[in-house]
Image (cartoon, rainbow, N blue to C red; front, side, top):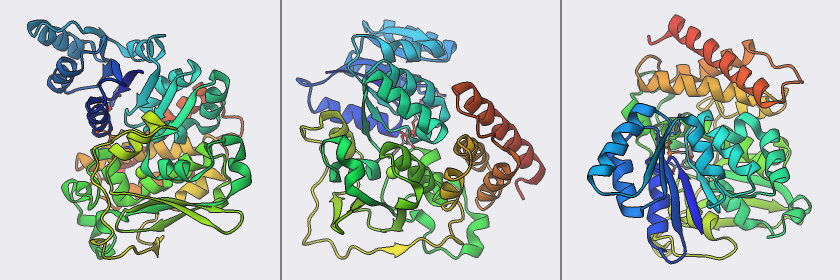
Length: 392
Ligand code: NAD
Ligand code: MG
């Protein structure tokens, strides 16, 4: 199987290459892409010898070209945003790992869906921005859609292989959440949280944006929206529960009352390996669970006061369709501002909820252009709000 890895220098991209490197007889890398980190991308090209390497920024692509030439690499370097879609849709690519962060990953992921690829979807924001359109494109393109997010991979593994039967089986989807680094921190001190503290996740090592999302639990809100589309499940049938050990990755409560759970150590190489090989299984390299050393598996309700971003998922899902695109865009801008110390941690919720109130979507906002227009309005709204209120 030949694979294009979109976002190969990121946390998911690197974990994907790690799994691929364990199965050289089974997988071949067709293309690697990244926005920055020229040196790392060059190293990856030397190791995996892809046909193409893509950097949307032409200047970065030029630097990569020079670097690879000096090392005698045969990888061809392409620049420009359109090149992402080219290596995604190329007939030689059988599968695409969509691991770009944020709404920036939507267009190439959609292109993979339209081209009927085996699509391994880590980029949850694509579904948050354009869920209905995305799922229609997957269906029309006859693409195979495999979730990479650990919770959704867990749900996927708990469901029957025949997707037609999912609707008859699911009574409730129960997404687990670790609660992030601030699950027990005094809420009064959340205003002084630093980016480093927010990115220090207790169980997972991830990119900075998703780490902040985990700390606010906006990540779980995005995952509720992701689950709504992946499993065609109404929002009231989706629940989030805190499970600090991150061993149970999520659960499906079936219509007969039976609950299916998927377990494992928290290591993204497991859901990545599942998405690559399903319905077969391949080694992921992850450690195995040792039940004699697990002290306890505990579950508790999420406190909406401590984590006000979480209920925004249900609020946005029951509003007109483009509302989740507004939520996503405002959150991306707020998280970026927080990471640059232009906004306090507790103000992230404030920015997102204000923007949700002021950028209204008409029920007709359904095309990609409509959604990008809402995305832009939300980004502008969030930016001007941050200029007014941030950082202290
Ligand atoms: P990351 O920041 O570590 O990596 C992002 C990758 O995307 C990098 O290769 C970067 O160069 C590329 N990129 C960023 N902006 C780009 C742009 N505008 N155009 C083209 N490429 C761009 O992020 P990550 O943690 O690997 O997360 C990737 C996606 O996977 C996110 O949507 C995240 O929510 C999801 N996800 C991540 C994890 C995890 O454990 N890291 C788990 C579940 C889901
Ligand atoms: Mg997740």
